[in-house]
Amino acid sequence: MAHGTNAMLVGMRRREEAAVSGRSWRMRGNALLAAVAGAFTVAQLVLVPPSMGLGWDEAVYVSQVGDQAPAAFFSAPRARGVSLLVAPVASWSSSTGLLRVYLAVLSGLALFLALRAWRGLFPIRVLAAGGALFASLWVTLFYAPQAMPNLWVAIGALLVVGCFLRARAAGRPDRRALWGVAVGAALMAVMRPTDAVWVALPLLVTALVVRHWRLGLVTAAGLVAGAVPWVVEAYTSYGGLRERLSEASRVQGGLGWHFAVDDQMRGLVGRTLCRPCTGAMPNPVVTVWWVLLPLLAVLGLVVAVRARRTARTLIPLACATTAAVPYLFLIGYAAPRFLLPAYALLAVPVADALRHLVTTPSGRWRPLAASLLAVGLVGHLAVQYAVLDRTVDRTAADRRAWARTADALHGLGVRPPCLLTGHEAIPLAYYAGCSSGQIRGNNANTTTAEILRTARQEPVAVLSVPGGRPPSYARGWELHRLDGVDVRLAPAVRAGGPV
Image 1 (cartoon, rainbow, N blue to C red):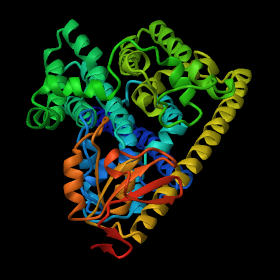
Image 2 (tube, one colour):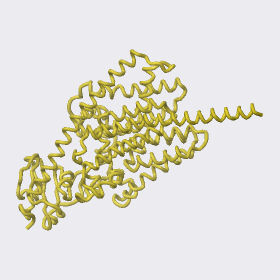
Image 3 (cartoon, helix red, strand yellow):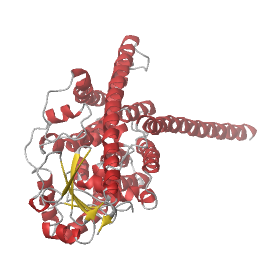
Image 4 (cartoon, rainbow, N blue to C red):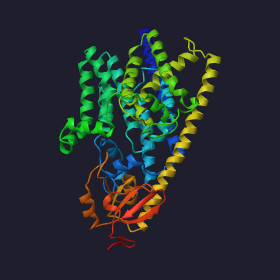
């Protein structure tokens, strides 16, 4: 009896030790992922100054919930997700610095949670390395603290794919993973519904092929839940879903076959919008990582096939591919941020491939391969930093120029309530606290008659490039040449305001 009691005590002790060891391992793993996410947040705050003013698209999104300026025109491709994201700060504060800090902290936390969803699918070191690779790209660091949707689509993509793989691998229903799938899909869809569909397409096909009906339904339900505001707005403001999709296609230059791979490569030097995308290709030093990325992804798939864990690598690669397709082959211009979801999904398989290159099957380091990889990564980080630094400097200077122009407009008597139209009217109107209106183009939301009617009630200014030809109704208006823009004031405006 004593022997039996002793055996029971020994067995209990071993189980307790195993449980403690498991918790310790999980804590260490969480700490490593948290370190990556924390470094991501700190890097944003250090390398992308929180004082950097809002950009054109940011002004549109923030103006929907802020009180610095009236809401700017919201074109068909846009979704309300970013406005909802920034509302906790922008609804009561006009501080750009506070908004940037909020987004930097929030994006770091979101990256941690998204990477954590992949635990058990890949070793923690692979997940941490994948997160670091994605977080260190100049385009990730540049856009993470900005009020833009693409980084959040990427975070949602990481979350939905990781939780999808966990739910698929579970022998019984995994409610936490299913909730993760729904939340990730909804996050993508509320930010950019069309991007969400492209990312989720392989997940829906996989669920159909393996007859995992619950997983497929949860994925679809998440997409629908996130897209509801966009669809409702399609019927209330555009006449229907088909009409909004058609208008969104027009705004983007008409969706169809467009080979934009070279355009995306030209954007790697820090061109935040490449439209039209002309000029010489960048130095190969800038583009080499981009060329190596798909090759390393294929290597990651080969490694997975040999290790008999194909699905957990093939599915994210398929989602990365479908996420990239519309921006490589269906639109006639480029912006580096468009590919953020693809980069996020490629990061983990690529990190797995790199681990395979520098370690033996037993887990021991290959000194030569590890040394070469370390040198390559240092060079890669140097290039990313150089592009980021140049992009931040140029962008911050442009936005300071907008602020100076807004101050000059105030000096001319253009103060709220007021209306700006013409060249760069949307961002300048936000900085000046005015409404913006256009009678033609992708942001057309008013008419000449409405502009003239407004000019009888409040200050109105027509903006054009220096030496540019103004619209016929403003040719006789008083001309002022400011830094980088010509301003024509409606006759009712004087230095002291409307008369």
